[in-house]
Image (cartoon, rainbow, N blue to C red; front, side, top):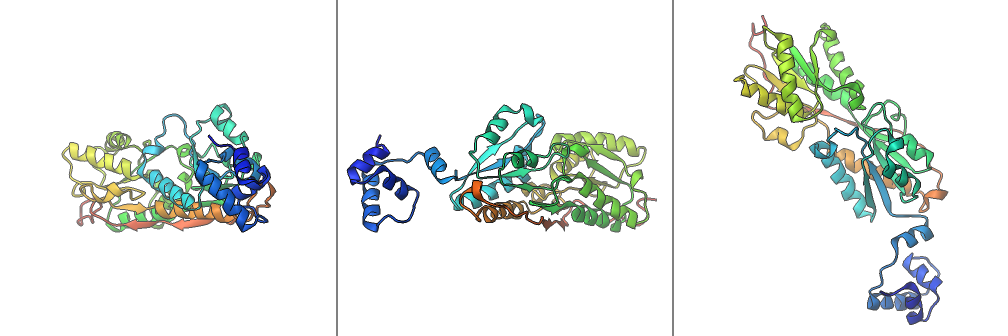
Length: 354
């Protein structure tokens, strides 16, 4: 395999000149540049990416970091897959690679993650702040790695972050359910530490209930873990809470749990929405194709991923060398969510709840 020294010898130039051509440095004549590039083409020379990174102070790599506890399944979640696909699409257009890392908490014991932090192999990082009790960004800031946070987290939402306003969506969904006559409403949620935006989402539900003059604390809640299976299991607990009556409506923290709830209700011989209405959150592709089609809150995953990648590129574009840049804090970017009305949530006939 050809080396940079061989390229220099064949092109009758110095090794330094070859390096300047490879890094597109100015002050090399067009004739010399063309001669070097021709030799490179003839020999099939492939420059060392690590060597180029060290010489340029730029690796061309951006980290995309998903934390987990060992049982989380974020990579099987269609919502996060869509966000990740959009990030990769935008960054690849600008010839950046993504380095995907999924450190398990506690981060101090995640050896591969700690090696990545100290490797100087990242020009920047997009951290998914989805665990309330385990923010990621402080670790990157401590290693002087430019970092933008994706998703709401109470400790990192003040600056350099982009997230969807869950409170608007949950408020509008609860308000819509109440407007259809539902008052026996059950919630399938998750434990607070599992979702950075947990407080936002719950505050939206609470605000709509308060506005209707009802007591939010009276609403039965059961925890799931975002999976279809947990949605099915949660239905058992909710039906016990409401016995001997049935709830008229079940609102779920995500679409997968809502789909599980629908499956379990139908398996019990109950009709959705004729007997019990169900709604979700996220608007994953399957929400449109299941029967009945799922009323849900749309979190525009594609817009979130695209804007996150573009923010990262714009922020880093102030300097080609991350070690020499002065990064000015960026105001948070908040993307609105929206209610999507389909078939799984119905208006009650008068007297249904009497």
